[in-house]
Length: 253
Image 1 (spheres, rainbow, N blue to C red):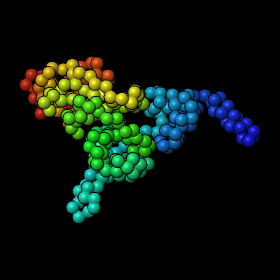
Image 2 (image 1 turned 45 degrees about the vertical axis):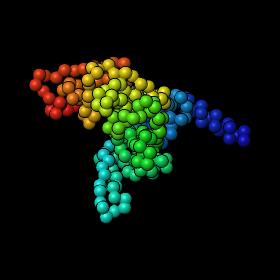
Image 3 (image 1 turned 90 degrees about the vertical axis):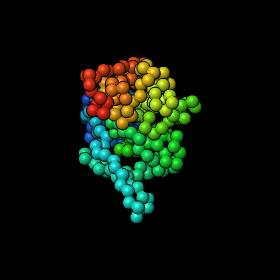
């Protein structure tokens, strides 16, 4: 037992003595799953792996896209596929690693390698997962007063690994099923939702399928033919006018 403890201390000493540049170089040669496990070695390694300057040198997430096919002669009728356009690993697009209540999911949004999924069996249950690392986080329930307007197209996932290891989910709260009253913002850093009242005009209505996250702001095309944006904390709200005569149907982000 004493010999084993001595070996463990020797290994820890060697790891501690390695320069950071060498550790990052070693980590860059690991597959993505192993790299994620290395975050648990100690806080120093976690900080090295999460540092914005090192992220680009380390294994990245999958490159490709998910798509569904439908065949009435097949059971199940709808099947999900993944087209990998980058390096391995290959993944199972059915995501068997998810918990039982998410055995059947609907993909609602994606951002920088993460997927926002809704349970087909439980429409108000959602999670965010990384199919490359098979890690997932179930989102807590929305505040009670916003569940009545929680349509699937009002949820938007935001993640920028170059800035932070935390992701955010925005749920647009609507008044009369159309006007933006505010936003529920979930942060993986706090693990909770936070409601922020809208800072846009009271008659603002947005096109949920025309949105873009850029430089810390989530942008939408509005039905009022403007571009509106909000930051990750719901504290900065902007309205960006467009050239005269430009209509919303010709605006793309």
